[in-house]
Image 1: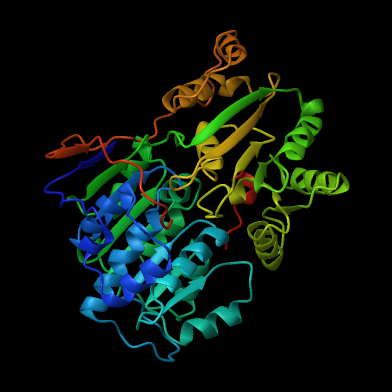
Image 2: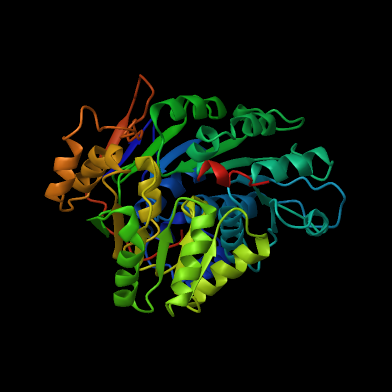
Length: 450
């Protein structure tokens, strides 16, 4: 299911050949192993190429990073960019913002891959690493600046980044940034001296969820004629993820985890826990049980986090224990299993966590430990998610959901699967956008993103 709402949406493309990419971009797309665009790319690329502002909702793992990078890079190369050269003040044409260091670095690596052999130079800035190094890298030339909100504002305030040449302003995981406390930083960024008004720049927002209240807030950054793109069951779990709920008490969780991991063997498994301390504790416990494991959370040094992700990606440590810092946007290929050792306290986070597996057409498995004493408020929301994804709903979960006076808890506050604007001049639905070939793609305590 794909829905585009707004005035005069451009026609979707069916292949990368139809995207009008230059030879360099075509070559880099082919080198990356891309065969066929995913639904969000089929519709998002022509919308962005047409110069329209966009609010896009798509399931995690849908390939939205390539959906905005490819048309932006194509337009930069077609219209020309300032030559990358050393200067104390850099004036990029593109700013891409994301809430976490890991996610923004991932976007940067994708941008660098696509821009290879072209005149476009991406740069990334984020907290947790030496500022001097990032300043020196920035001053070598920058056309596409990727950054976390705090570090971007820091670079602007230092006089290292000018905004007068901005053509594209991209917010990835926009709901997270606006809904979890980054709204003041975002407003400071768009209100910074030199930043073109929204009528004079192209603004793109991508996320897995857009509740109505976040849509209305985000609309402050978009032109009135923006297009709204919804792909799949927005706010729902991907049907490529086999979800399994296991009823288990807190005291028995470690043993149950061990049983699962001894069966999965060397297959990549991402284990989510509630706290930073718990992440290190569970990782140490599993290592003692001869299961190579690493952990990632907000208190680890940046180089430690990068080493943990590297060990996990390479298979050196096939088990990664994480807090929600790793739940949003990280593109770790071939994650076969996600285990929610601790369930989150809201269904949005559950969807993002299990979205680490089953990405871009691959089948994954998500196992969640449900403690009746602590997770009862999630029961009804979980039933809704399981039903929408055509998964089996355990009878014990239904009994738990309807056994209390009100066990709805923080369920389904509205994922924003539809355009919140009152008037929808034109709406187009595409029911048969079949699966594509593989393509590109917090806890409160975790909010120190610099």
